[in-house]
Amino acid sequence: MDPFCQAVERAIVEARQIPPRARVLVAVSGGIDSVTLLHALHTLAPLHEWTLVVAHFNHGLRGGESDGDERFVARLATRLGLRIQLGRGDVAAHARAGGLSIEMAARELRLAFLARAAVAANCKRVATAHHADDQVELFLLRASRGAGGEGLGGMRPAGPFPRHAPLRIIRPLLQVSRSQIEEWAGARRLRHREDRSNRSLDPLRNRLRLRVIPVLLRELGPEVRGGVLRSVELVRAEAEYVASVASSWLQGRTPRLRFSRLPLAVQRQVLLQQLHRLGLPAGFAGVEAMRLRPGRPVTLEGGRVVLREVGGRIQVLPKPGRGEFLGEALALEMTAARGGAKHGGARVRWSRRGDVSSRFVRQAKPGVEVFDAARVGTSIVLRHWRPGDRFQPLGMSRPAKVQDLFVNRKVPAPDRRRLLVAECGQGRIFWIEGLPPGDLFKVTPATGEFLVWRWSRNSD
Image (cartoon, rainbow, N blue to C red; front, side):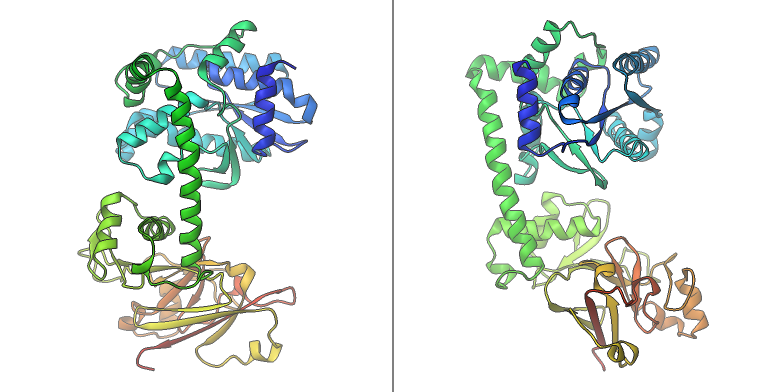
């Protein structure tokens, strides 16, 4: 085996990217990077009993050239004896509809296609051709925008696929330079396609690659590339540690310091993780405003209003002009054996138990419910009723509109909007204050861990 394939194999093994006998979807644009990746994996596949499936997405941005790329990749897959998944999309229309840049719109459509293709091909891993020079470009680009440790840590060799966590994205060439790729492909006379848009100076990343980095290499020497890559590794390790400390603090797994006593980096990460959990934008200005101004409303990008409680928790406040429905939401982690929270004028407490008597489950007192802890999970959101909410109470065969449930149970209209709702990490409601517990989360003979859920109103 030649040194290039040995380096790629070593990177795959060290990062545990592909286990033996795995199925891998290989994203191939037709350019030199992805063609090289495909050939290298094709060389290694028999040694590890991998099954490769090729995927190509036609962005439709270059007319006949884009169609030519698609035909080239299809012929390449056929020549190698590999199955191929093809997709295409109207990137320009997607950009207009979403107010996105062409680059961002193309990325969204491409990733969505790759996720669908991987599921259809029964592949749990998607391999992309990002290499070391891409990592350098990304670091410099993010540094110019003031990114923190999470951003400057760059691309990981392997990790969850964006917006489709059950899949894994792997980058076998991440430790290989562009010059090494070109040398290996040239020695084997690998045919590939040239994308003229890569030479355009309009995208910022192209200007960085074609103009800025050559100046840095010429003025500071070729060791700049290695220095940047080393910084990426150092920053990533430190950022991952800060993230783990913040996660442990949120979940109550560490001695409970007051939020104000946490190190500055951990404070920021505590807020970032909550914003991510709530699906809200996490810009630096918003995070700093919350960190420095507890108890005061902060407007995030997109107009959502939040505030940080003194204890460090984030609450989402109602949108201006929407008085009918309360918009507050509170993200909680329930990994500790017990815990509690106050929200919306009520207090909830929970405990996780390995054993609960059947009588306790059947005869639970008012203000107490028992759920299957595994079905609920550890990440939940406390909030109020929202338009369109559906819920399947105990004993019902299918979900119903929450509004209909309130009407059937004669819940007064003014009370409906203040009642608490609890949803699990998958977005399913498992509990509504005053209604029977969720049928999908009920205790069964197979339940191994029980979640005892208690609640009360401040006036109770």
